[in-house]
Image (tube, rainbow, N blue to C red; front, side):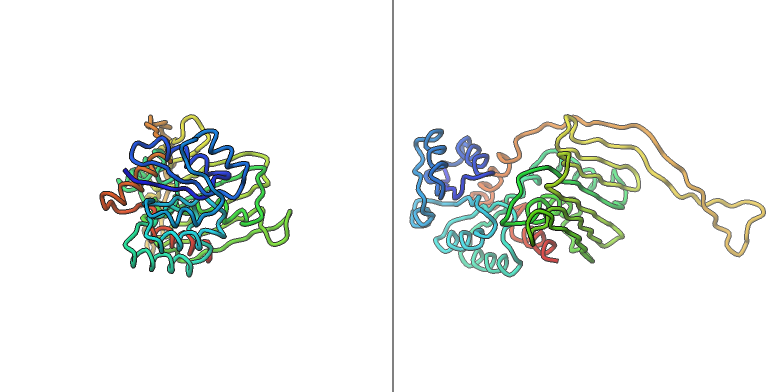
Length: 327
């Protein structure tokens, strides 16, 4: 059984800690957190866990096999490097680091130490996201034409990262996963800072991929509606993934087909005329069996360490996400 420590129990940390404690494949022996209030929170729920303010107590503990890092993005690089230097496997919340340069340094040390570094791109462990991945890979949607996503809300304005670095890693990670992790041909971003100078509250991002595939990402924490929706338009069918809906996946048998037509009174120097067939068939809401994505993520992390399973959200995937954000 793996001995795991967690650093950071702020906004997202409690969810990670709850799933780690619930797992039968690991034991959580230590938590490091700078907030005394969060110390009381952890001790109240999990009295058997040793809680302190110093992350070095985690790194100095030779009995700990792996570290889960759920701290602000600016601290990810330093904490991940220290964990690797002390021989521990690492699961880091998204994004892995602030730059590709930092990601490459983490990767180099992980290879030297022969340790797993995994990033918490949790949506890749979501059953609905995986269902759509299977549809794309099987060809049921046809050729992918474009994807667009909206991740919007009113509230929780941050100062350490802007809306792009806070929200878009989710959407970039999902799109990369669906398309097989290609490298984009171009990335264009337009963002505006309304509340804090230099911190964009609203961002529109356009990504062009090979094979004429376009992706558009809209993120904002200044929107009247909470929205978590992605649409994939294929040549055969279209699918909508709505993370807030009861039926998270809706498949639309819709499309427009170009048909060649030959007939009289046509220009015989250009004999191929086209008409367009509009298809509008059934809307299918498939039944999807859900398991909490965080628990699936933690199981995968343990499999990577114990069984040598290839890491779905490992360094290669994490670097592409950060590289697209940088671009």
